[in-house]
Amino acid sequence: MIIGKSRKELEKMRAAGQLVGRVLQALRRMVEPGITTLEVDRAAEKMIRDAGALPTFKGYHGYPFSICASVNEQVVHGFPSNYKLKEGDIFSIDVGATLEGFVGDTATTVPVGKVSPELLQLIRVTEECLERAIKECYQGKHLGDIGYAVQSLAESQGYAIVRDYVGHGIGRRMHEDPQIPNYGTPGKGAKIKNGYVFAIEPMVNIGTHLTRVLSDGWTVVTADGKPSAHVEHTVAITEEGPQVFTRVAESELEEVKIAGV
Ligand code: MF3
Ligand code: CO
Ligand code: CO
Image (cartoon, rainbow, N blue to C red):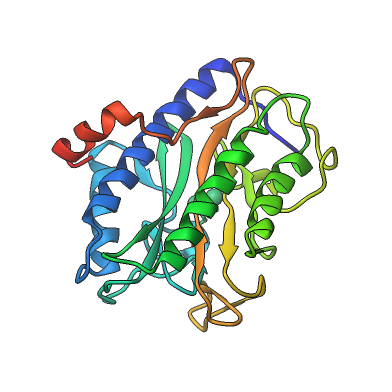
């Protein structure tokens, strides 16, 4: 069942989204060769708690951390660890926060130091896939329109779309109906309505679309060990068009830098 949100609920979701969007921007600025992914996790948890929110991931089906930290061939759900990021890595940070009962969920993939043009292009296209998906977020469109927007761009650039993991509805719970695949057929799938809120999250691979899970039970990697990128926004469908709750306004980025949140 897809849970539509009232105006009031959407405003709360915007607040949760803005908080976690700011946290993600602050984490992004911490990334440099030598920092461990666990240090990034610790910083995320502190920022979220200091803002009066809860790190949604911690304890979710037993997940032990506040962020997912997925490096290079890791697709999603990587464990933060003592691994020191090194020049040339790409690092996907996924973070969630629950504020006043509502969840925001967002992710980005960050180049560590100087990164190959091949990987920068992968990130750029993955980001553009998300932007195209957001442009489909109107009442009357279908989930297949979102999936098609992501898939058609990624595949036209020679990349593969992960099918084993998908985006999702979001609200009081991180994962609500419907599932939002990053592939699809225009005009197919459930009809989109105002008041729906979606976490849209393209996962784009350089090689095969196939994945496997490491023995920690969580970390998803590409089956061929080639790199993967992942980005995510929490987006509301409204009469005024798509509202990207986890997007931080350009004018506020400087503030994020100064305050550390
Ligand atoms: N935030 C992830 C997603 O985008 C899910 C994380 S699972 C958790 O759907 F266990 F780490 F919380
Ligand atoms: Co996420
Ligand atoms: Co998500």
